[in-house]
Image 1 (tube, one colour):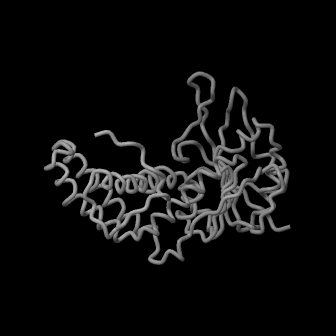
Image 2 (cartoon, helix red, strand yellow):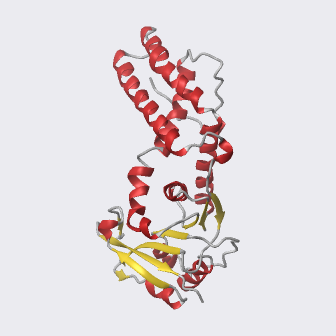
Image 3 (cartoon, helix red, strand yellow):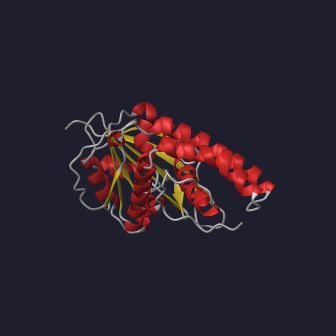
Length: 291
């Protein structure tokens, strides 16, 4: 049975008073669950993003976070990992800001669906709907077995995700906010942040012609003195050129706290765009002294 791509979750309307008794409504609800599973659970947070923060977590106490060069999930992962009250994601590319906002809307939509009812509907799919579809000849026995296993996994993961990340009251749900900003321009942000984080951003900014010294100065201006930490992760070599992103921050008055090598950064390397060559990453932590 061929299934078309599901619509965006924020546009999906599910009437929980109506029994799910057709392949169409079954796949509609299934698309919601699949979106939750693929975007929010372990694969993208605990297995991908959280390990990237391990090397510096003991150096940071963060109630407020600025994530520059933000990806769709990174600002949210930082917020949940450190238990921050405020997380701001900035990027110069409007499409990245739009993509990140779609994730925020998706989470709000999932929470507004009232998860106990959603979980009940998943259980009904497993116990009633799938066997009925099979007995009516709408799906095969082999499909039935695979789908029951898959939806059982969704149910378990949804329960884990709900317990870990979602508050009982949606008004307490903490989500990032995003702004289109170029870090080489003046950062018109009211907050001073406990943690400023960027991963594999500066080398691209430099290649794009952005002023890295201006970026260092701007980021330093919104970091809390003494207690705040600025964390960057960058390649040490790119297109045959050795990169140095430490000096710009030292030149604007920052102090280097520590650095670490590739094997502590989540194991990632970047494609050096020179055949199959890659460059190891290096992480750095800076603080701003009290002037």
